[in-house]
Structures are given as structure tokens and as C-alpha cells.
Image: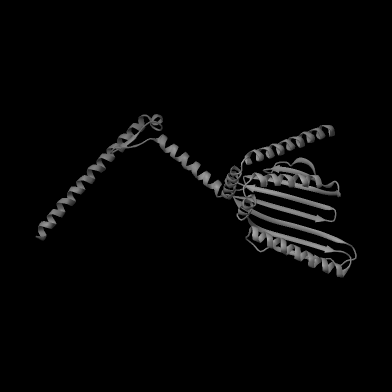
Length: 305
């Protein structure tokens, strides 16, 4: 009985060995035929020839298309998982003011830098005068000119915000949802103050600590902190008035979060009847103002020459 079982098993194994050897001979013959053809037509076979092994067909053009498609898919994925980094610096010491906003995205390949080298407060009626410069990807800074921020300007901003609120369904909810996707990676805020009197200086120092704590507490509720904020309030015990402050913070948001926020905003705008018309009108008005600023700047540059 056992001898019969052993003989049947040996016959099956030998049959399998013959089948495998036959397939290997066919594959070897096909590969040898393919290499032989390539010796005579190397240029033609690199593009047009086809390898056929037991009914399997592979075209080199499809391999190239597949590789290109895979590269594009990986590139899109890399863009979606990338972060947008924003670095803001503000300094003030007596009459010297300085502000800088640096935006970096796509792993640092795209860099935008906005610099405000001068912030001049004229009076309550005329407000502030800001001089701005813009550069991109380490290029030479382009002077955008000066912009006046006064009571009229603030009223126009408030009016535009009201239009956005009417044209968008639950805009405040959208803003809170978007801010929850923002991460503050670093926050440093130092202030030195002195009014010439020790008692008033101590009182003002306490008030500044309270104001800073309230602001940071509000930001903690709205956004996410990756590190503990570094806050300083330094009293200056001197007979002269002294005030200087430095604010330095970095934040980041993922590109995917920006795209999702944009789609949510579009959905909320479409939910309001006539909302998209109000947004288009508002954007056209902003574009018209931007063109007017550029035109005035060119005229001023020509007159200066």
C-alpha cells in the first residue's frame, strides 16, 4: 500500500519537473530571440518592440506613461502634505518701528517677504503712514510705496467685513474652524516700560502682564501651540520714560487644510442667495484699488526721475 502511494507521488513530481523545465525552455528561447533582435535593431526595439511571454504583452511606452503618472501622483501628494510657514517680526523702540512678514511654502522653493521699514504716526486724523517693500525668492525688494491707515481706512475695512458676513453662511464658524488648523510653533513677546516714577511703573508692569496673559489665553483657545509662549515684561527704573517691545512668532498650516478651508468657504458662499455676486463685487473693488495704487506709484517714480 505504502509502496503504491510512494510511486504515484514520484510520478506526479516527475511530471511537474518536466512541465517547469518546458516553461523555462520557452522563456529562455523568447528572451534569446528578443536579445537577438535587439542586436540588429537597437534603436527601433527601444520604442516599438514588444515582449511576448506566454500571452503577456509589455510595451515600453506604457512603462514610461506609468512612470510619469506615478511621478505626478507623488508630486501632488508631496504638495498636499507640505506646510505653509509664516514668520512675523515686529519691533518698536521710541520712534523706531520695524515689521517683517516672511512666508515660505512648497518646502522653501517659494518665499515671499514683506518688509515695513517705517511706521510713522502723524496725528489722530491722518493716522499711520506705512512704507512697504516686497521681495520673492531672494530677489531684490520691490518698493510698494506708502499706505496711510486712518479712521476712514478702518471704516472701509469694517464695511468690507460686514459685506463678507452677509455674503457667507456662518463666516465666524468658518474662521474658527480654519484657525484650529493653525499651529503656532514659536511665540516670543518682550516689553520694557518705564514712566519715570517707580510706583506707576510697577502698576503699568502689572497691567501689561494681565493684557499679555489675556491675549495669549485667547490665542490658545483659537489656535494650537507647539511650544510654551515666552513672555517678558521688564520694568525700567529710570527718571525718563521708556517703552520698547519686540514680538516674534512663527506659525504653520498644512496645504491640505488651506484647500479644505477654501472649499468650505465656497460652499458657505453658495448657500447664501446672491453671496457669490457680493464676493465678486468686493474682489473687483480690491483689484481696482490695487491698480490705482500701482498707477500712482509709477507716476511718482517718473516724476522722481
